[in-house]
Amino acid sequence: NAGVTQTPKFRVLKTGQSMTLLCAQDMNHEYMYWYRQDPGMGLRLIHYSVGEGTTAKGEVPDGYNVSRLKKQNFLLGLESAAPSQTSVYFCASSPWDRGRTDTQYFGPGTRLTVL
Amino acid sequence: TQLLEQSPQFLSIQEGENLTVYCNSSSVFSSLQWYRQEPGEGPVLLVTVVTGGEVKKLKRLTFQFGDARKDSSLHITAAQPGDTGLYLCAGAKSNTGKLIFGQGTTLQVKP
Image (cartoon, rainbow over all chains, first blue to last red; front, side, top):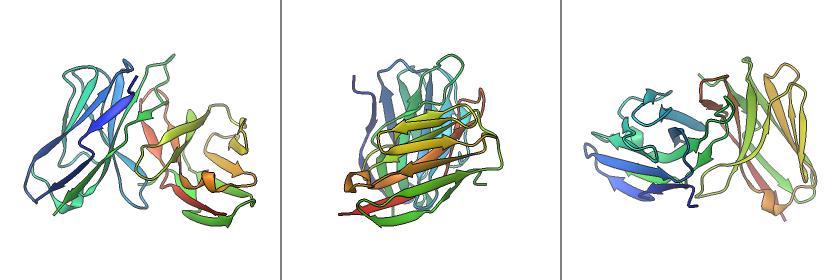
């Protein structure tokens, strides 16, 4: 099993450009998440999904959109990138286990720089 | 609003020393997790504590969940350079499917 994979690993954008980050998991997990990690701020939840075809806003959703068309994939889109979106982005997935969904498995991250 | 406060944020110690990292909140969590993250990688789960007062040991690491399920601590005995990394605590709220992360503690263990 590959676990959780993310593409790309690195990306540099100019302000106003758009891009999509792809997350894939092969563990048949119901829940998937997108986080951003900035120095001194831990991980902040951007959007998440509780199953195929569903999405919900997290703590910092502005400027991002997501889609979960297939259970194994969760896409994060930036329509018009801004320098404030420079960050490391992590995808995670979680199984539905006896009513608990707190065990999350993380991908390796995407380092995004917006100039 | 940061609901989970970790302290200290940075810790630099010599090999063989002991240390404790704290994770505090005013909120009650259904469970609390500790993750370790190495540079260029995603966080990896170390342990989950569920019951108030629970203590779990993982080799030289001891994790404790507060009686009221609002706080937790991570104690490392005889730290080694391999323990270097970012330690994150994360609290789960019942049936939300979401975790709330602390800011993290960067640990450097010098040989």
